[in-house]
Image 1 (cartoon, helix red, strand yellow):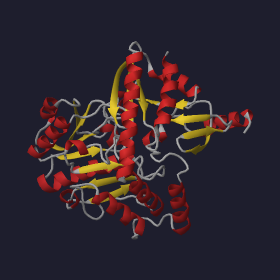
Image 2 (cartoon, one colour):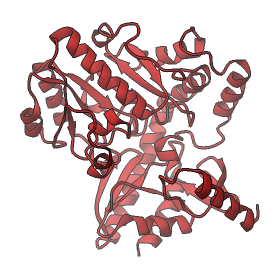
Image 3 (cartoon, helix red, strand yellow):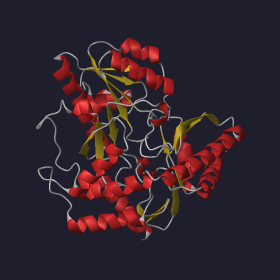
Image 4 (tube, one colour):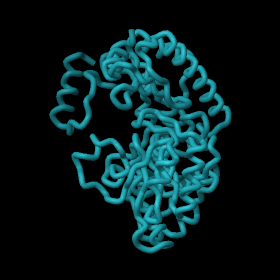
Length: 399
């Protein structure tokens, strides 16, 4: 495609699409494996992966085949009717999520956060009556941009333009159990947290912290919600990011990688919570449609394969070593390394956005998480050679 044609596409975006994102001056056209290509033929090593969505990269034969086969058979009928793909994906999720017995499908991360908050309040009302409605969230949290999700999202720049958001949320300090205890009370119906924060700077929750939060929830008869929308589904080297802690939540939200790039979200909930949710309490038109859930089963089976998760851990270890070398060689630029698995943050001593732009110009796509943190969330199929390529570019961008 010519430069003039690319310019025309960018102009159309500016003219017709609501400008809520700042986008670079190229147009992505296709993807292959861990690479993206723009309309002028430039190749980019993708360490954004659709913001941790494209776990299997681009053009995966099983995913594209599942899309084609299911699209030819049945795309949508609504939740007024049974379909086989939704039941199959729900079974897979439940069978591999100890303590979680039911699934509600939605279309996005924000949507299933909204549903989880509703379910927690419904459960509390049914068991304890009115007044038990408060929700404890954490500094650095990001759960979405809808009104309920904003209420439990800590960053003021997302919340303030839309105040007042849903009332009843209060914030504790991540990895500080004493602050959680101070925030708890008989009015708390739920605690919501990300086992690994994304937008909040790739901070990892300590196992002892998660265990302590579980104990506080039990003491105050509050539900524990794990938001694994970004950190779940193999991203940290285990199927679920909370697994190493041994803690079982009452509800868990999933979304990003679950259908390989198609819109989907899911709430997993224990039977004790499910028993409090009745016909008509919640709904969705598109959630759990046959196309998304059919692809979701393919993606889930691939990621949950022990050999696949072993690969993620091996590549994660190599990435960690490579980042440690980078930090040691550039102490003036790199302040701290964060995250786990293939969900990593590089905190800089300089603003992150200019470094991201330089890397992009040299063929590497990375994201940011706040003003001074580069976020690396490559496809889970990434190989060690891709790590070498990425770190070579990143090193050049930092010097």
